[in-house]
Structures are given as structure tokens and as C-alpha cells.
Amino acid sequence: MRVPGGRWIQHWDPEDETFWKETGERVARRNLFFSVLSEHIGFSVWTLWSVLVLFMGPEYGLTPADKFLLTSVVTLVGAVVRVPYTFAVAIFGGRNWTIVSAGLLLVPTVAAFTVMEPGTSFSTFLLVGLLAGIGGGNFASSMTNINAFFPLRRKGWALGLNAGGGNIGVPVIQLAALAIIGASGGPRVLLGIYIPLILVAAVLAARFMDNLASVKNDTGAAKDAARDAHTWIMAVLYIGTFGSFIGYSFAFGQVLQTQFGRTPLQAAYLTFIGPLLGSLIRPLGGRLADRYGGARITLWNFVAMAAATAVLVAASMAKSLGLFVAVFVVLFVLSGLGNGSTFKMIPGIFQNKALAKGLRGEEAVAYGRRLSGASMGLIGAVGALGGVAINLAFRQSFLSLGSGTGAFVAFLAYYAVCFAVTWAVYLRRPAVRPPDGPVGPAETKDRLSYAQV
Image 1 (cartoon, rainbow, N blue to C red):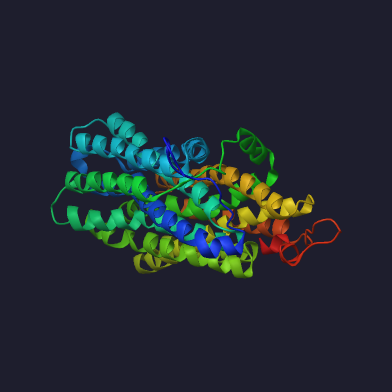
Image 2 (cartoon, rainbow, N blue to C red):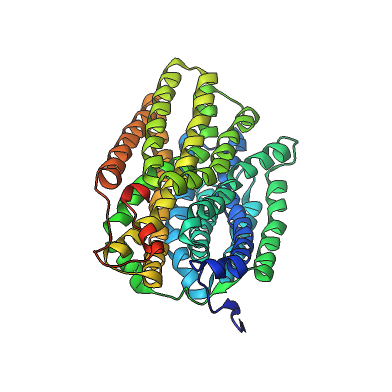
């Protein structure tokens, strides 16, 4: 049905297998594809300054501490805007907000194109960096929108693919910078290429995406999600996974330059590898979580992240560039895997709570969708704040110790905390089951323990 506000779908029931096979899957996949495109460019714009600072030489007058502060500010804004972006989907519709959020990316891109030259003040760069942060918001609205399109049994894969396709905007902007700036094209050429791409993403969203009428504005959902302890527990875990991914994406090249004396091009040749592999593996994290349970995958992923970080501490102290880069890439891969598994846990947790409350069928699905969609924005925002903490930790570590070793020790301790929280909350507890009473086969299958979320 078409209405003046855009293309709206009045009936949407992905949990109905007949509806899903005949209509729902095709429509959901189409919306997923164009959502990924817009979110992908949003990530590229958000992480643009992680590339630009590498090529801002002495003529720009910025110290390493200034550059870490600049990338911290960009990350901070990207985290904060995720909250309003989450609820914009319910207010305007997923399709409509994708068009608007894609168009807004023109503001920071054109602004950076205008000021990117030696002689520009540091305060001006900070202001333009603030604008670039809006690119981080596209993730939250995209994930909330796609969460409503897919059935619970497919959410791990769908959310992982959606987020992974967006995350891959990080290595793409780094590769584009390497190709363009490395060939003496200059930062403005890179920015000029992204301006028409932003317009294309907005037009394609208008042409091929849909709004779901069932996703209505519900301010109560935000309040309920904020009051639920699981929202903040999952935010702590997401700081460890996505916070690591985005924080390391901004900081990796600067660490190579500052600690190991790499030139901008030498650093750029290495920085894209980790984010690329971490982005590609995120859907696998969701798929593994669908099969084995998100909590189990997340738990052992934090064990591996802690082990990799311990090796990074040793490599940093030994000043071994080869080992440092290799293990840093492994850490990126693990952060991507954990991104997929932690986000799959969210809809499962709230579906569990619905069953524990005695809800059945569509009522249980609606409850889980309502709270999981609202909580995703809060979890995504807090998780992105981990990227701010990582850049500030590196800044302080280099100011105090002259290397990133101190920061890595702090990250190791945080991964240990995440391991303990995952085990204590989601794996130590007994299975949570709905109250006794007659249930159908489908509901019996949905009697999930927290370990299965």
C-alpha cells in the first residue's frame, strides 16, 4: 500500500513460515541489501578521519595526541547519535529514514572537502570531525529496521550480514585512501568520490526499500529497554567486541606511525587488513550463534581476545613489528566474530523474557521485537563508546609511557571482565522456561535457556 509518506507494508509476519516463504523472505532480503549499502557508506564517512590523520603531516601542525583526540571526538559523536537514530525508524519508517540518514552524510563529506588543507586550525578540524560522527548513527537505524524484517530463527545471520556489510565500509575507505592518496590524488579527490556515492545510496533506498507499518513509534519501549538490566549487561559486552573493532580501526594506523615509525603509506598498507577480515567474519559470528548459542560463542571469543591481547603486550614491549601486526589482525577478526554473536543474543534474550512471562505466539514475538529493537540502539551507542575509550587510552599511554603497552594491559583486564559477566549471567544460570501449561510444538522449540540466546 502506498501512502504520501512513502511505501508502506501494512501486514508483516515473518514468523509465519508460509508468509515468509511466499512473500516475506524476498522483501526482507531486498531491504537488507539496500540497508547494507547505506550503512556501508555511513561507516566509511564515520571512519574517514582515521585515514585522513595518517596523511596530515607536519605542515598541518598536529601532534600525535591531537590526532588521537580528533578521532576520539569523531567516535564519541557516532556513539551518541545512535540513540535518536534507533527511534527515528519508528517515527519516520525504515525506508524514509534511510533516505534521510544517507543524505545527511553529505554534510560532513562536503565540510571535510572544504577545510582539508594545511593552515586550517585544529578547532576547525575538531568541528568537522564532530559532523563526521553522524555516519555512526546509520548503523543503529539500519539494525533496528532489519531486526523487524527477519524471523527470530534468521536474525543472527541477517543482523550479522547487515552489520558486517556496514563494518566493511571501514577497510574500504582505507583502501580507497591508499589507492587515491598514495597515487598523489590528495584527500579532496577521495572526498569528491564519496559525494556522488552518497546520492546514489539515497536514491536507491527511495526506489527499492519499504516501511513497516507494524513498527510504530513507541516511547514506552525505550523506557522499558532502559530499565531492563540485560540492556546494560549486553552494552558492557558490546563495548568489548564492537568497541574494540571501531576503536582499533581508528587507532591502528596511528599506533604504527607513533610506536613503530611507519610512514603514512606504510601504515595504510597494513591498517585495512584487520577491519576487512573483522567485517567479513561478523556474519559467521551470527551464524555460529544461531547454531550453538550466542553466549557460548561470546564467552570463548573473549578468552581468545584476552590471549591475543596478552601477546600484543609482549610484542609491544619487544618492539616486534611483524608479531604486533599479525596478532593485531587476529584481534580484529575476533572482535568481528564477537560482534555477530553478541548482537544475536539480544533478540533471543527478550524472546526468553516473553516466554518466561507466559506470553505465547505472536504476542511473545511482538514483545521480543519491541524491546530488542529499542535496546539495540542503546547497546550500540554504549558499545561505540568503547571506541572512544580505546583512543583516549592510547593517547594517555603514549603521553605517559611513550608506547601503547599500558593501553593493551587495560584492554586485557576489560576482556577478563567481559568473560566473567558472560559466564555469570548467561551460562551459569539454569534454563529459563515459560510457566507450565499446554504449548504447541513451535512454542516448545522456543523454550530457550540463556545459554542458547
